[in-house]
Amino acid sequence: MPIATPEVYNEMLDRAKAGKFAYPAINVTSSQTLHAALRGFAEAESDGIIQISTGGAEFLGGQHNKEMVIGATALAEFAHIVAAKYDITVALHTDHCPKDKLDGYVRPLLAISEERVKAGQNPLFQSHMWDGSAETLADNLAIGQELLERARAAKIILEVEITPTGGEEDGVSHEINDSLYTTVDDAIRTAEALGLGEKGRYLLAASFGNVHGVYKPGNVVLRPELLKELDEGVAAKFGKPSPFDFVFHGGSGSTAQEIATALENGVVKMNIDTDTQYAFTRPVADHMFKNYDGVLKVDGEVGSKKTYDPRTWGKLAEASMAARVTEACSNLRSTGTKIK
Image (cartoon, rainbow, N blue to C red; front, side, top):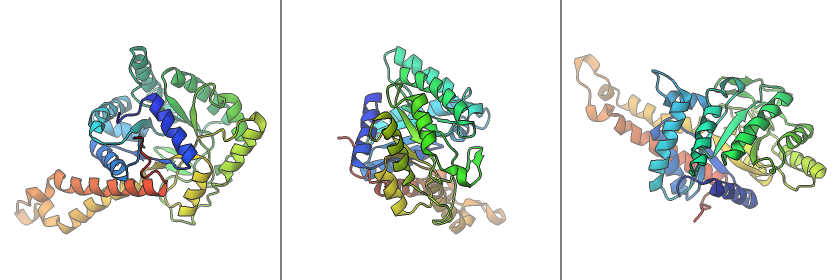
């Protein structure tokens, strides 16, 4: 069962929360980065999450048409076939989708899964993200209610981002300032609108100073202890202990202690994109610099086919990215936790 069924995905998240570990959620943009992610999980003996952003889906759709739904659907169908050779379980997820792209991405993908479920099949994706962080909280939650109802009917888990994450992600950007911290009131309003499981399961991307992109440790003030305050504030009002399944966004450059604190406070999913992009590209750059006279036809020569063959440098890229995924599993304590 390499692609998680809805029941298994719920079990994965429950196990992560109970065991205080999280699944790396690896953004992919090609069949090769998909294999790198699957390989990394398999070598770590960890289950995991494969995700596709709007930009990644557009890229996967091909530069002739750049259709997000086609790109995401094609890779998901491909994943259902090739993941069978990996001895781990993964869930398929769509990453950040702002309001202006819902009709061109998440809603059509939900419709595909709705039809699959009606036909007695499992959904194509196991979860989708609604990024309403650029909207008012009221509008964000209103759209979240609509999407959660549809997701629940299609046996899909919804991820919501209720307050801004700094930096830029596929065209959605926020300044780095005090608005990057979710308040207890924000969390309570979320629970009131979306429920605490009775209206459908959702993952909560709360902000505790997170910033997308590249930054060095110390350049951003992360407060992962804030997640405990949010949980306790909502638990006190609604009487449900540890009510939220948290997602850690913008984690590049986080210290080991910040990650550990986040895990202790309910994070079950951590997005990994910037670091794996670099891991994939770094050996390619090394290969090109060291073999420039082979990959280029310099001074009228013919170059070296074995050197510029994409398979030559592509294998190096896959191995490097897979190693970074394995490292992420170790950092998030998911190593060796795969469902047997």
